[in-house]
Amino acid sequence: MELVLAIAIGVLTASGIYLMLRPRTFQVIIGLSLISYAVNLFIFSMGRLRIDAAPVLDRNNIDPAAYTDPVPQALVLTAIVIGFAMTALFLVVMLAARGFTGTDHVDGRD
Image (cartoon, rainbow, N blue to C red; front, side, top):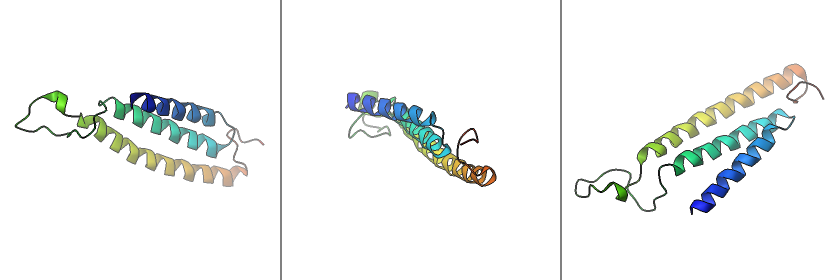
């Protein structure tokens, strides 16, 4: 499972960097989104990959190895919401810039 997650993070990061180096603004925004998804997966994986483990401690079982860390889950949830808002803001700015300049290239030239 860890190998699949590491490969997924690597593919998302590589695809995001490739798209960020493209000349069009929409591709840059999609690249930023892919990198943010890769960072979210990385943060989520730092909380240990546990299947069928509760994130909240029980009074009867105090063993910390039986639980997963809830902090990365909360961080990823917050990052998803903030990333969605930033993507919407970037799209609005991109549309406004395209209306002013008449092109969607990053440097403003065709």
